[in-house]
Amino acid sequence: MVPSLLPLPFTLSCIIPSKNRIKLLPRALNSIKAQHPAPDLFHFPEILVVDDGSSDGTASMLATDFPEVIVVRTKGIGPGPARNVGAKAAKGDILFFLDSDDIWLPAHLQSLSPCFFNDSSFACSRAFNHNLVGGKNFTIPDTDVDLSRNAFSRMLQWCDMVPSAFAIRKDTFLATGGFPSVGWGEDWLFFLELCARQKLCFIPDITVERTLHTESLCTDQQLKQHILTMLDRLKAAVSILPGSGPENQAHFLALQKLASERGDAWRSIQDFYTAAKEAGLTAP
Image (cartoon, rainbow, N blue to C red; front, side, top):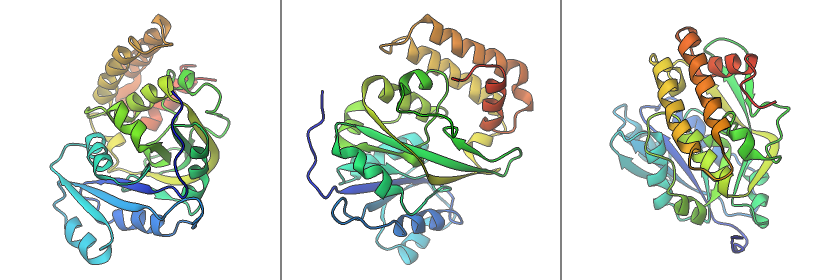
């Protein structure tokens, strides 16, 4: 079904889930305020912070330093469900997302918004990642990856998208049910579902900067077990998605075997990706 055309200029909403990130959150918010204007294309976005049970003074900081921000409070439900709560409260035609430890580069909104002139339901760009946990900096997706060429096939191999570099029509988001209510892998599951059923507009430019740090969720001390659980969920998901087959479940079984054998040595999800790539378990 082709989405109906949206009136110009678009109304935008940006949703930031955050828990105890008082030192990082202002940087994310200021990167939104620094976006290049495009009044013929979009209105400056409303900003919603979903404060997911912070105890570090986040609420007071927002009230004092960012009074324009809409604050929605939840109680430790996790980033995926927190994004869903923010999406339901948002008023924009197009939903953008930003994690509290990431920033947008100034052309982010200007780069992704034109995707919604056509029949694309969602869009994403490339994110540069500062790796403070060890190893080299990296991009998601890799610089040689073109997600406009069968994003679903690539997503069946690896998650080549991140929430901070992603935008979606609100009506499409609500129709999908949003991010699954799981602790790990909610973004991969959600993007896999979207790529199976909706049209993606991929912008190859780097418009987001992320930081992989010791307090990132993807550096959890129980990383190996989280990865194995996530892969179980993905195996179950691909068993019912159109366009997937037994070979896709076999792929996730191979990733599980790799994680079981080598996961104790990994410090972050990027270590998992590096090992999977070396083993030929990511898309070429």
